Length: 442
Image 1 (cartoon, helix red, strand yellow):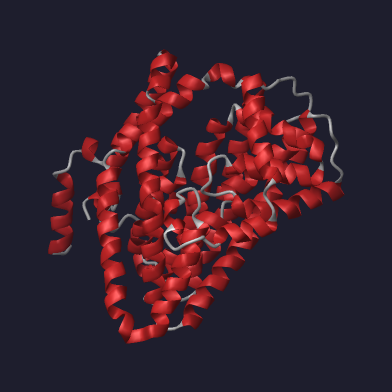
Image 2: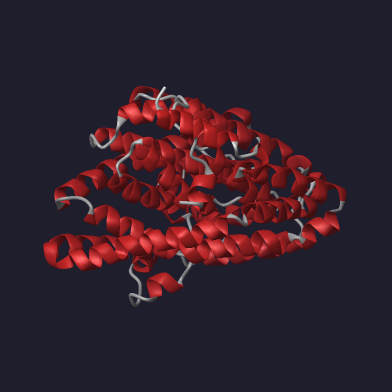
């Protein structure tokens, strides 16, 4: 055993388990759930703790994505390499996303979760759902493409609900830096140093994760609680089971052929998964996840391109939800969609799901838009599932982040940009554990 290994173990023993951030987040989730259950009014009153934490995270997302994507592209020697990574990433995203959508259709047809549904949405839920339906009417392919291009360079960063404009601007900036070559070294170094500062800022914010997780979980249980589940408990359970089938079946198979074990990967990113569970937002784990994947052996240039792009184009959990919820609504409304209509629904969802990121309520907008394109009378049915969305969001976010973790490793492997010895050592637990604590102190 090397002196470094001995020193590493010794230093790890000095840190009590309760000082690890992921342990604190787990404890906060449990305490928050108990508060919401035992004292719903107090749980609801704690909502600002979770809301403010997510707001702090969202404040950092746009500049972090810009800097990480730019440094990722600038770190590649030629544009062909970036194009190769991009093409392989998009190909992977489309194939796996289609699997996710298809699994939702298959499960909904087999189990028929909406058949005989007797529940009714409240007036408030129907009114709120109507706002998403109205927004869906204004969503077109042209508008989606138009929204990717910001009005000004600054506007890309001021609209915190949209990730794609920042990603678009980062791609242009990165390729421009690559083209100017040596003359752009000063700017390249500045952006790289800025990314370190931004990660440092986010590290400070991450220390508030337990407080944010407690507030978010207390509110969820206090506001919605067991009584709010009613007849929709079956849909929630089916969604979780379907997501598990996708993670361990589809992603597990992909991981096997890519040379790693899905269970070991989940253990490796457990800190990020707990953070996502507590906050119901995959954005909260974006930066720590990229850091961890780089430590895992994936080249920085691949991670910093694939993961931010995946947050817009590889939303496996959201895809499962869209098709499963759409067919649930059709069944609950007594509408029997033909196989042809379901095929159209699947095809439309493949396009509309690409906009299901960043914007608050975008999942409902996409769901309503997808239903309206197949059977317009079903769009109002989104109100049926509005009340349980908070119980679904955690599973969607966790599935999304696992999907993007697998994507980054797979694409890195395809590109020959994966250190397999480091990958094996990290997943086997032979390297010093790097959790959220390492991120906030880096």
